[in-house]
Image 1 (spheres, rainbow, N blue to C red):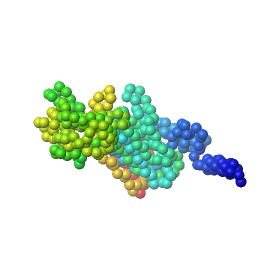
Image 2: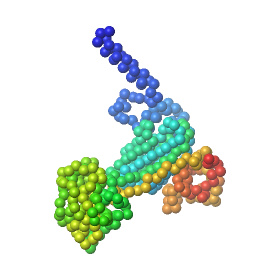
Image 3: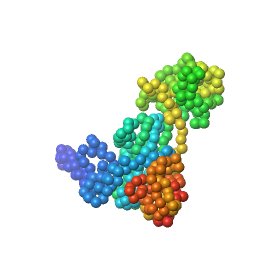
Image 4: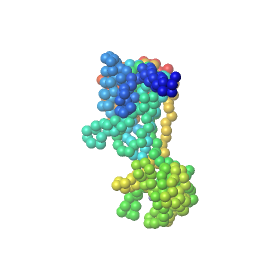
Length: 389
Ligand SMILES: [Zn+2]
């Protein structure tokens, strides 16, 4: 074969290979997918669009879950079972803060079980409209999202139509930055944002983190030293610019400065040593740590550095075999949060049956026959029908 013919031959093979790949691919792909990047939910829905029985029920469950108003605090974990063709959607309202990264992680015991995770921002006005801001990738049962706007968010989790599977889920946040004093943690923060200063004439625009003189002060994130010097209230100070979202980080009262202006620094690099220079002369050595953002000026650094617990995945040992529980007490309050502080949004009486969505600590996550979701305390629940293995 001539060179030209060999080239043509390989071109034909390539086209055929792509064609075979396309038709053997289980998911329905569209030429526009590369541009519009459909979510995992949209890709999945294409397989069922012609299923006039199951698909509308699945879709309706999701749409009505957007109107649910159960609230949870983080960290949160829940275990339960996603039942085949029961069309349940889990929905939670969660308050999230700028300076945190939000994590949703789900494990399932059935291989290939698909789960769709969507995060919405709830508007601050009285309308409470929602806007989709993040969805999971097709093969991931997790999302990770850095919060830029403090407020209320809605999380929905919907399993695929088929395949019963146990699940274990954990939701938590982590600080966007590292802790700025070596070997220290939350305990060392002894003065917070907003505390009165100069007899109430001004408020504290940062955090005071106490440590022995000479303890290393470390970069809370990657960036560049924008200035250093000894001036004003802060005494020996280091200013750092970050690439992301343009924060300025302020480290003050240093005993000594160990970096130079213009230097590139990475998280954990030593910037200087804890001291009490500037207006901290009369107090014990500590780092004053501040964060400034453009026109907003100083913002509360606490969410950016506060270390919080990452919950364990609960095991599947209490696998729930059937999807229904009943009420054992004469009356049980249905609450909008898993805690006695949760608002009472309904009640159930002896022998009422409730669909069981999952278990979280001392509470069952349930749905009543009118479709309302709620939490009910485990002491009021009869699991005889639930056949927990
Ligand atoms: Zn301070």
